[in-house]
Amino acid sequence: MAETILIASGKGGVGKSTATLFFGRAMAKQGKKVLLIDADTGLGALDILLGVADKTMNTWLDVEREACELENAFLPVADNLTLLPSPKEYDETLSDDVFVRLVSRCGESFDVILIDAPAGIDRNLKRAATACEKAVFIATADEVSVKGAAAAAAETEKFGISRENMRLVINRFQKKAAAKCRLLNLDGVIDRSGVQLLGVLPEDKKIPQSSVTGVLPGDKSKFQKAVERIVLRMDGQTVPLVL
Ligand SMILES: Nc1ncnc2c1ncn2[C@@H]1O[C@H](COP(=O)(O)OP(=O)(O)OP(=O)(O)O)[C@@H](O)[C@H]1O
Ligand SMILES: [Mg+2]
Image (cartoon, rainbow, N blue to C red; front, side, top):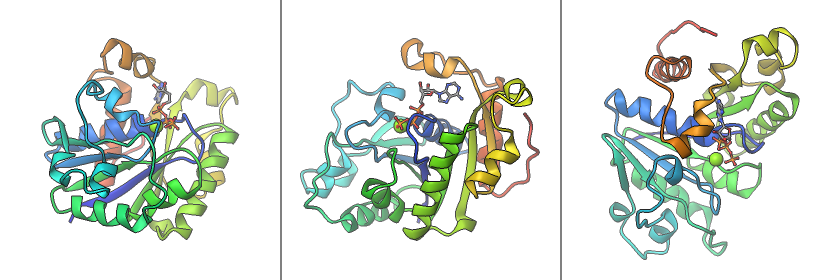
């Protein structure tokens, strides 16, 4: 069965979809069969970020409604990398168990499932979290984002993921800004979030531009190296923190 990992944040716009995409790509490169599930109903972004938004897509809701077979909703996007797109709206008459069972069925065909959670700490987070055994919280180094990550971690714990299975990724980190106290330093973010650090992703201006230009940070970029270190740590390897 696949390892199921929730990517969440509480606060919106801090990098969940970006992290899901880059972690998924890096894991696929390691040879793992990776499924990305977009759980951001109505605001799904992974199809755009993966450059497949123009393709005809079935969504996980189509599978839940038995309008298509699970295999027909899987959209292969690269070697070892598959997307299960998000629907435009959720059907509130369906119980959350249906989603949990669907993720469990997906687990038979993949090594890792990353679920890109929506912002917020409501029922939509609950649905996604209940289907996962681990969670990675994304926060930027500012008070509002860290409050969001702390709240999301507290809610996620109620939904069944233990603290030891939670990790924190600090995104868009800028060493100089933190040194000048314009951003929280790493200890500040870790203490306030209450979640153990997995890694730090630097600010990279190619990231927001990439959905327009199609140009991603290069393999030797600080961003890409940071992604690779994080993915190795997810595998249980000890990798030094490089800022
Ligand atoms: N490390 C980074 N450096 C620069 N820009 C980044 C970085 N990470 C994310 N961004 C930018 O921040 C914005 C938000 O990122 P993203 O969409 O991944 O966040 P999100 O948490 O998934 O948002 P939402 O809550 O709306 O789903 C995007 O414009 C993205 O390109
Ligand atoms: Mg997103």
